[in-house]
Length: 232
Image (cartoon, rainbow, N blue to C red; front, side):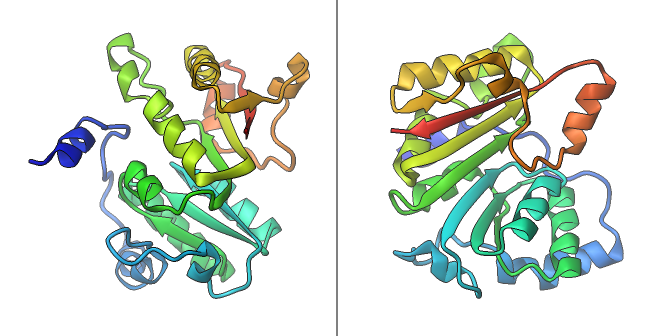
């Protein structure tokens, strides 16, 4: 195993890949629709990511770990001139998203169904306007914190692909992960937290649709933090 593959083998930021058996329509979508929307990092890398989309787009956003796809679909619908790239290795979540994309005839979504770090390393430098990392797996046990997606290595990846002035937006209901992210971004030095008062991180992002993870947190009595960082 070469050095790069050995390094990637330790980057287990996500858990299981598949849940319940897919329904017939979901299986059909995975076979028929996913190949046309999937980005292939093994293939040629375009100089302009806008060429990945069949409709004109003027900005590119990346969402890592889109879960049920509620946020990604909402944003794609309200911003048809933005190209959205969604990353989600969990098969059942990908199938749910594909159904929504098909039902709504969305043309401005492309997806990747594997390790987000592979895609980040493939993306051109300074090509992304905004990265969303929303309710990522908190890996709550301290011995597993090294598996959290926010790390100095991944922040360096974010910094490389974001345009100057681009945004990194993070949401979580886990206090330790919120503090972890603030500390790591401060240590990196290339990201400026925009908050000036508590309302800035306690108020959801503009036009926020909510997610099922957020709803679960509310039911269990946890509030959320919404952090916005600007790439210097």
